[in-house]
Amino acid sequence: MSNGHEQVDLVGRVVAVLRRIGTFWLGRPYYQQVLFVLAILLLKNAFDIELKNIQEAYLPGVQEFPRAVGYFSGSYGQVVIAAALGVTTTTQWVLLHVLLIITALTVSFWLIGRTGSTTRSFLILALAAATATSSLFVSIGKYDVITYLGAVILALSRTLPAATLGALLMASGNPEQSIIASFALLVLSFASEFRDIRKRAVAAILATTLTWLSVQLWFNVSGMTVSRIDLLPEYLAESLARVISYPGTAFWSWFGVGWLVVALVAVSVHRNSRSWVLLSLLVIPASVTVITADGARVFGMVALPSYLMCARWLSSRCISVVGNQQLVVGALFAGLVLLPSGITGPGWTFEQLFGVLARW
Image 1: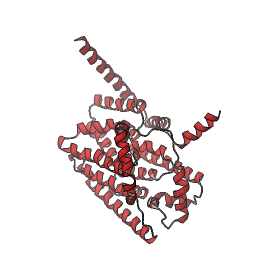
Image 2: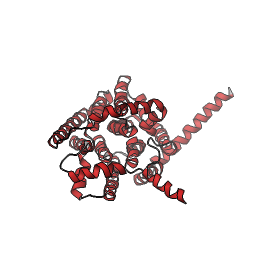
Image 3: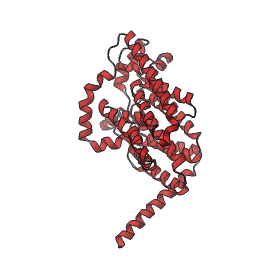
Image 4: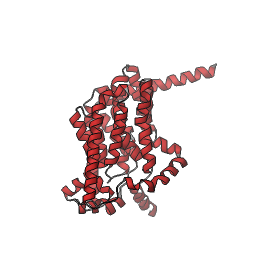
């Protein structure tokens, strides 16, 4: 009997602590919340530079532009920007992408800041918990930053034209991936709680599909015969082996701390909506991830528009009781600080620093 009372008492204490944390966070000015999130992102995530791809694929692609020279030319957004700015060296490319990451996060924080105080206090934590946000730091120099920026605009902008522009920007980073992300958003719109995003999802599918068709036409004109789709069979076996060998690591990395948001959405929507939500957030991104062998990075980008839509709905419509606000925000805050990031592991920067320190 005493054990039961002790367990109840422990749960009560944990809930009380989480509510205090939530109260503290909800009372912070938005600029302090932004600074804290930035600090967490910088401290918790490994840094990696896409050195090989930059030198062997991306920069040569810029030098050959406007002719397409590889499947990576389909990520034309970074190519156009780099060509317009006259980027010719690895250092310039990395600096450009650091600026793009800063821009993407700034726009994200601005869009979140335009929501209500309670909504933005939850949304900024949900954004920081997203695997897609972590992946910005472990793939510096890659086109993901443009896809990320477009996905955030698609999900968080107030108007349909702005959302459509976000979809076009997202597609300039990765057309094929953006079509799947837009389709996942359309699937989410079949849940009764998200019917209001149907027009946005349809506009995104049209925008991303037209972009993909334009890229294919460009490839044909340039004499290109290889696309991302042609590479799928080459990596399928590797991806399946990775998931089967390390299922726990793979599943956790898909959302990381964001699993808390996904779980709350799944239990908060109507029973008839749950299958649509899970299809959008889990099944579709997981299928693409397993097929492409790109792991959590692709999962996070494909799921990002739907994930942010769900987080916004959860913060503005579901967490309506003050006690629940404090508890949920406190739990997400604690998870973001204490739990491992969805994308972990030392990258190129770590290897360089380790090599220097090892010689000492």
